[in-house]
Length: 498
Ligand code: GLN
Image (cartoon, rainbow, N blue to C red; front, side):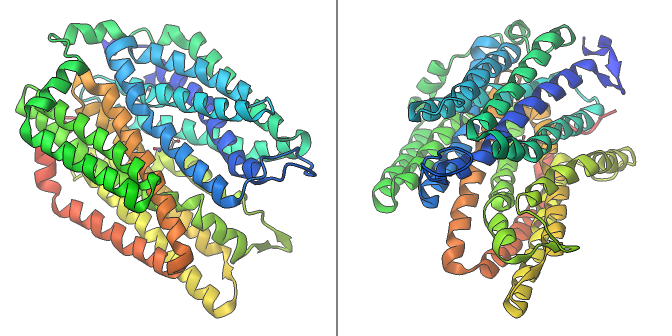
């Protein structure tokens, strides 16, 4: 069925429709995100860019942390809606429309508009992001070796959007003020919507709800799943135990901690219900290995996302940014990652594809474990940077560039690979939901990153960077040691890729 699609550069044309849709969506997301903290902390009077909200940086960072987490956690309901109600294609459309409205609302200067806009963006990304990613997988038949490369191409689209946005939006805001910046994000999203609607003719075979209906004989509802939970004592026990931790944490350690655990509880309960409901051992095993791989995902993003926080501050205040007599602006370091992705995505993908063709180890779990190690290794350069700072009073930019380089290569081994892996292993009727759970895991990782970042003011950067270095490499090594049994759980899902 998927074999008759017309192709471009050896891939279905639909891939390029999704590429440009997601490119513009990410332009709007990262463009707006880049402004968020700055806008919140700008004084309410006397700033050339227009009034900000006048918040303290602590208040702003707290909202930022919740926002970046929620945006991805909402991928779970977003995935469910696609699986049970709309199909992925319509869910993406609805998400795109909501995003246009959300960014549009942010153009207004009222406080209610700010919160409403953010809320709509959270809903919109939740509907769009997991489902467009699942659709990429749907373009390829099972065992098609192009799938991994397709996801790498898609990942280039993501980062082209983020690179363009972070390069352009600062100028727009400097020239015309905050709300012009938000408006630019909105225009980008409208372009994304236009591309998507125009390209529907290339997406006829993918993301449809009807296709799913045929494969699902017993349309299991989430209500039924919930009954299952109540009837299984172990599941009920684990859920209650986690809920107890949430409540305890809420009182003892604050509402933020409590809420974090409530999310974990809901996800865990949902996952246990689904596990029990799957019919074959093969489906159960694949589901399990997917969930185990998500442990790497949380840890990866928890370390990696220091980029916007601790490493950003480090670049700002402890790095000698003098280049040929000119000062390199701190924000430029944020563009390094996207730039490196665009340069290296194809190279990394080809490297793994060649290994696969030579029948060497190239399973997704292997790549992800290698990815987390390479990323962790990048923190070695941050350790060197802090050592140099201690001695010299400032540190070289080169350390940051090297750290971001390793982070990016690591990201390319784990992030597009995980997306592809999910579309290979998920049970059909929960395909979008599992993509949602993946993004929720990255969202939790974002939150973890914030918590680690905050601890640096007590522990010092040297200790934090060294700690991350050791921890991530140990986790990666652990997964490498468990590679054989983990791969066995995939039941050969990746064995015969041609
Ligand atoms: N930078 C990637 C994107 O925006 C990864 C985000 C994530 O997985 N949380 O798609």
